[in-house]
Amino acid sequence: MSRRQDTLDLRIRSAYDALPASERVLADLLLEFPGDVAIYSATDLAERTKVSNAAVTRLVKRLGYSDYREAQREVRAQQATGQPIYLNNSLVQPPTQGASLAQHLERDVMNLRATFEGLLPADLDEALRAILKADQVYTLGFRNSYFFASYFRRQLNQVRPRVHLLPLPGQVVMEDLGAATPKDLVIVVGMRRRVALLGQAMKYLHARKVPILYITDHRTVRTAKLARWVFRCHARGVSLFDSYVPVISLLNYLSTEAMAQAGRAGRRRLKQIEEGLDTCGEIDTAN
Image (cartoon, rainbow, N blue to C red; front, side, top):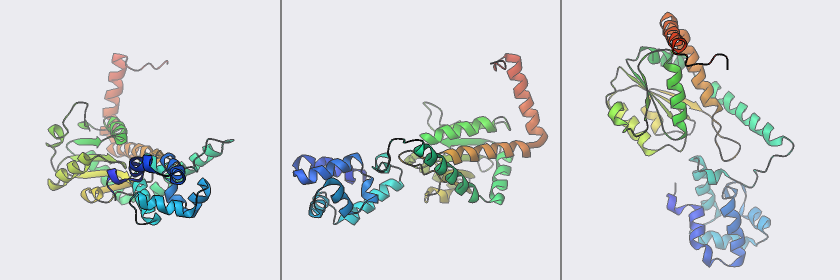
């Protein structure tokens, strides 16, 4: 994959002032919708911008590509990493008579079905036993994945003690995670556009034989090899933003099953929490 400084949008911006008028028209379109390179041929782009095929070829070579197909490969690679500007294309239009709402729902349902069809019951059962038996459970996530790590920690905390969310604000991750042992469990949520520290932390844990349960997207390759259990969620949205419906549904399922398998101990812990909430009046049941 090309380095960030070699991506299409930055190449265009670097060369923009020197572009002739015919190429600048095409450059304007690609700056607004760089994802169009992945879905349109060179001829299609020429027709849409009313320039010649030769102008497309000249621009591509001026930007440093050997041909149009090389530019397409780069844009598709950027899309695979979840770069929002490359997921944007001119096919995405404002809502018209509910059509976009229906498309949004259809994609969410499709992602949800594909995710759950890819789950193996034996792996789920094994991971649930690990959640309940571990001395300590850590949930770890960054960027958008931090929300899901936080949600899962809150749910599991009602089932069992010693569940920790990482990283906490202002915290150095390894100050807590560095103490994890093979008797613990680290639940990593790492949806695409992962930070480098995530892979480094997983490599550290893997080397120390700390079990990792990894909830990620279906494109993950390198970091998936470091986890004992990998649950992949299909998260491709209809345009720029990923669909996280399968992630929250999977976490809800795991939380519900963990409570069921915890049996009397889980129910006792939940009862203690609810009694504490009642005593302190922290939940307004009339609201």
